[in-house]
Length: 597
Image 1 (cartoon, rainbow, N blue to C red):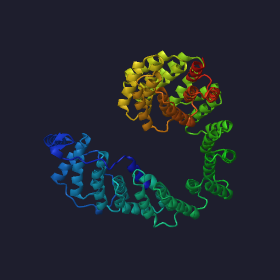
Image 2 (image 1 turned 120 degrees about the vertical axis):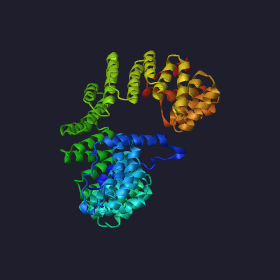
Image 3 (image 1 turned 45 degrees about the vertical axis):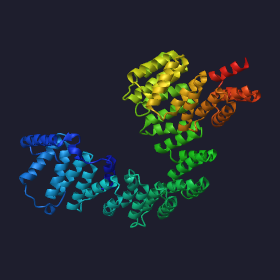
Image 4 (image 1 turned 90 degrees about the vertical axis):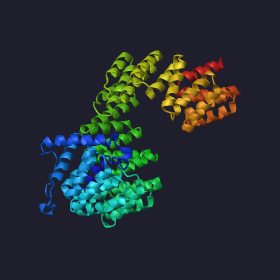
């Protein structure tokens, strides 16, 4: 038994906010006390004819001489039958209360254990803690009992109370103390008080000054708690105790990076000079070089990794992903294909990434073949949608639509995603009426689905259905009052038509309030000011938007305001640059044509 079991208890999702049933106002969980008593009497009647050999698991290793001497009285038998039968019938409140009473009455650790299990199952953390506390009291040598109680206390935020139990658990794991320390931060991660977790782990580690894993655990907790100097010092101590420990070296480099990327690079370089076969450190070094823009040096590290680890599928995948960031698609393909040869377990993920690379390099046949190799997992649906999109781009529009409509969807989110995918294919083909119809059908089966409402509003604008646009966007604002793009789209639609400009300004200002750094919303604000005749404010916001994003529509608007102000050469320069990037943009072309006629 080790701390991994304790971690799994925490993962069960116990939360301090869960409450035991109360008797407020004569009610208990929505039932009157009279109704509850009636339910209990029915359970008793059923228990009287039930087989008393229940499914309870009392296979609990303990010296029987330590068990309490307890006669099986009628009252104990009644509580036992009532508790077990209530459990079988799903009446968890009765089961929990009866087993807590049994544990108190019998002082039997086996009963206390059973009570804690039932309380866990019923998601009553305070009752589970009470039962586990009795379990430890009745059998203080049981590691299972201490693990369970420690988990309860951690989930309830009572870290000080958990400390002695964690301390005894670590001490009892003499052969696995190092492993126990490496699991501590993960085990305690559900508790939001990172400062308290840091102090708890620091206190636990005090007795193990020569154990590298203890220093590692303290460093991690310090990092999460914002104690960066301590994090660096403790990780340095871990590495001093075990200089060849790659994980500690990689982590120390990441800690140093917060202070200085150059310092982290120097550390990694010096470490690799001493330990050139340290794969994990070289991967961390490569990632840092990419982040710092040192692409040539990063490429050298990737090639070294490939040469030194030809049989390691995990390393091949890491190389492939980093090579993509360097736009070294040849190395990406080579390393990911090698990972497939080495039977990397998530082959679908590799095929998906390869397909994206093939799309980037305009190798459409290879991209489609790779997408078809994605057969499972979370990437299956996106891969099939991308395959359908490539089919449509080849002119096989109906085949693409049929493929999307045949794809399985297990929830509303996936259903909506497929509707949006079909709409996007049709939109690219310029079939706006069909886009509207697809989204209309989608909203029939998924009424008020926000993404579908937003998309239908945008396409309604394309086909002259302004009343639908306004209705859908106002409904979206009702459903999602923090959706900046809904306010922006509605305000922009008014501004573009020269309608209700004060309301348009109010809507777009609300969008800016919700998303102040969005260049497209900033563009809308500049545009509505321009429509209202305030060219100075319009130009101000359009310049700010264009400084963030040289989007073609922003370029069209900025150019128009400059043209209107007489700065025609500046306007033409902006349009010319935008056309080089996006020669087919409808709004840009229409703006230039309209103003130059």
